[in-house]
Image 1 (spheres, rainbow, N blue to C red):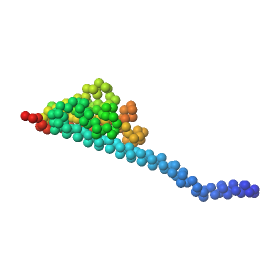
Image 2: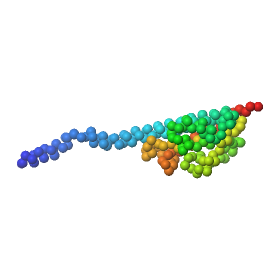
Image 3: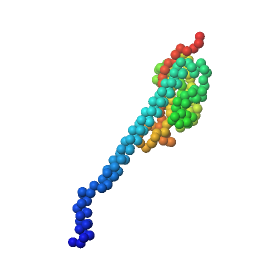
Amino acid sequence: MAPTMRKLIRKIHGFPCDKQGTSAIEFAIVAPIFFLMMFSTFEVGWFYFVNSTLDAATISASRFVRTGQSQNNGLTKQDFFTLVCPTLDLFGECTTNLTVEVKQFNTFADLAADVTPAVCRGDDQNAIDNLAFEPGVDNQIIRLRFCLLYRPINPSIGINLSSTDGAARRLVSTFIFRNEPFSKN
């Protein structure tokens, strides 16, 4: 046999024993799955962070209405929006991402009968302009509703939520309460 043929036969027989490059191949197989799981975990964590911050802002704003501070200070819809906005500015410009609705009801039956969906940015501009700001009076039933559009870290992975055309997610936070007796008699 020729020497080159012997070398070729040795290489063929030694091929199953050659371990060079196996780590790179294993990494190439495992890495995409690992990174997908890691970024999906980050995305879910981001969602819960945004959601809890929105809920906290809703509760804080409802206290301002419930205790009569907004009524006694004569706040307008724009003033109230400006008051709420700094808490949620972390998630983008409030004027393009946030809607605030404060609506009063006479009875809980009236509240239960109102099944109108939350109005978010990106909906009909007329509906956004006509959002209610009715902070009510003593013992009035109030529904305060925020709708925030936020951008996920990576829109292609993570949790699947209601999405707008711009790949922003809609988060709605609602707080229902009865105003405290705050009027000055």
